[in-house]
Image (cartoon, rainbow, N blue to C red):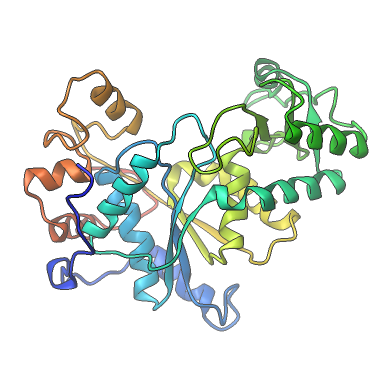
Length: 338
């Protein structure tokens, strides 16, 4: 399966001739124009897949938007593996992801990264939040955190450890890093607002203890940052100007902005969301696709019945066809079904 792609598909085999125009391009143009938040900066985007499965037709839309936006503005697009969850990830998926992006005709040059490349920096920013009294070490279990979170119509209840002295939280967090405690014993939570109308802002967990071997860092770490904390930091450290993601992350944007605003980061990255691609009668869940493969119900990830990019490739679709399909469907904020 991996290895079928030997290089980047040439432009003459991917060019569609379509005129590209959508709201993201309008927003980016305003940002880089006179008086914009990114005035004078080159447009810099990224595609950040989690290496826990193969890419499918829905991911192709994100790839085309991320790489295509940078391309249209003469900017750059990074490829970054979101490898903050060591349990589900595998190096084999990393190579498959690279192959699929090259097949679509895009390249990241020397800008290939892992979120784990920044674990030390992310840890440092977590300590910065503790020192600013904006994060605390919590002893509530996962179930207690869920129960105290409240509902959409009722506020949450503050953790008994929310006002733990910052020196004590800092000491405990450093001991968490040193491996003194078992999984689940402590978490690090951001101190935001337990009465916020946005559930993601109710003192979210930003670090957890997880004694698991990581495919990149081995056993160097036993605490791992949550995606919502690692993502904005990774974006800023890579000088990403525009973090383009699917609509499911719209409710996470206030937390993204909170991290950007309260950590001493080099770049104020802007998150913009778009509606993802949904296709009738098609399994678009990576988790469900993984189940089909692991249970032997299909002939691997490149089974031509699957909507994976390697499956579509095996079925005979060309990269130009995939790009044309996505470009003709357009980009909007409104969910739609094809």
